[in-house]
Image 1: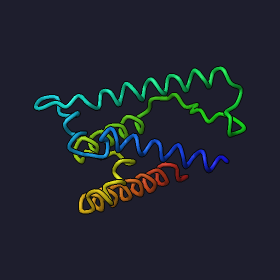
Image 2 (image 1 turned 90 degrees about the horizontal axis):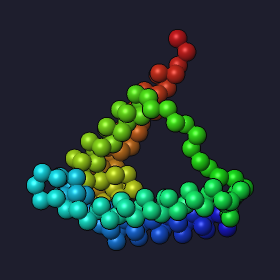
Image 3 (image 1 turned 180 degrees about the vertical axis):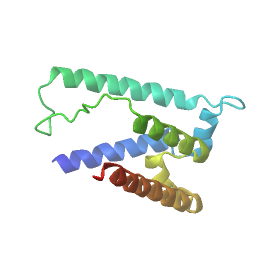
Image 4 (image 1 turned 30 degrees about the vertical axis):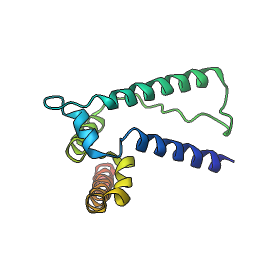
Length: 141
């Protein structure tokens, strides 16, 4: 049952991304570029996401456990450290340059294969580089 709920949730999320045009890099870049022809349409997506997140946290506060799992999976780390800041900056730069974030970027493999392949390769290389750097950083000396 958990796998089915996860699949339905992911499918609903993907449909929402497509419907809101988060999968269209021109719309995303138009939203991020406030100096020229700013496209504020994704502001509605952001407000909707915040509202749904707020409702979800209110439900989580009132229930001891979720309907389809034995416990809540809530992040516990609250540290703002240099890896978080650097990662956020790199994510923002990549999103602003390409118009894709990871989820919608995968749809480019079908919608726009020439860009999609480049984006996914860069995503995999960046993730791999992070893994290597992380292992080197935690390696005992």
